[in-house]
Image 1 (cartoon, rainbow, N blue to C red):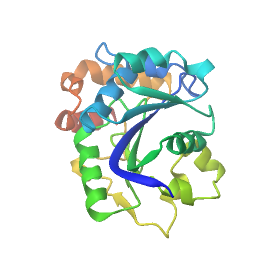
Image 2 (image 1 turned 180 degrees about the vertical axis):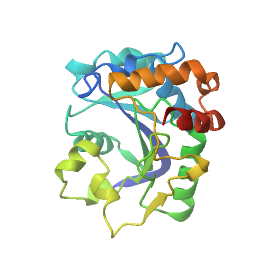
Image 3 (image 1 turned 60 degrees about the horizontal axis):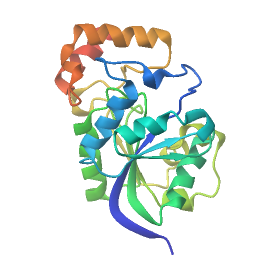
Image 4 (image 1 turned 90 degrees about the vertical axis):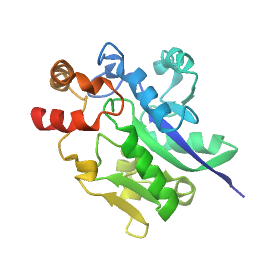
Amino acid sequence: MIKYSEKVYILIQARVKSTRLPGKIFFEFFNETVIDRVIKIAKKINNGKNVFILSGQKKNNEILEHVAKKHNIKIFYGSELNVYQRFKKFLKYEKIKPQYFCRITSDGYLIQPSIVEKMIKDIKKYHYDYSFVEPLSHFAGEIVKTKLFFENKRVSNLAKEHVTWDIRNNSNLNVKAYDKNFFNINHKNFLVLDTIEDFIKMKTVEKKFLGLKKLDCIKVLKKAVKYIN
């Protein structure tokens, strides 16, 4: 019988050789690498506890061990391309599973801790199976009930890359989709880091909106999103 605790893990999906923009997690935002910033965001959300990096094959991502050590968190290696299996392998490895986990991506340099904290509070209170901000916001994470990974026997090809695809689109589950204007931010607009053009945008908002340096920067973020889009 699987044992669950009431803990919530923050799982950072990260690998060095990203398909569209390799090495992007080492690009800098306010003189700090993106991966360093994302880890700080994750630790702020969870009071510094139960934060893990979930990466691909060790031979391709061993450099991340230095990052994990610097922040005093653990790194777990799994499938390079089948990200769903990477998450499931990690969860199987844990003797006592967290009741929920929050999935955030390693390039989400503007994920807002206060948004994710609210989502975690809600999912515990209302017992959702899964929650996200439409249309899968780059300023928030996804909260997932861990047991779904052990009940789901068939996994689509889309889920192998996008992890939560099958869960998000399962009408039999209690899914909470927060509105695209959650926290009065237009989540349809985004500041992502997938291309060189995205990097140029990142450096533009960095120069113009100094308040984005703070990890929780919703007021400034609203202005930046309107400006860039």
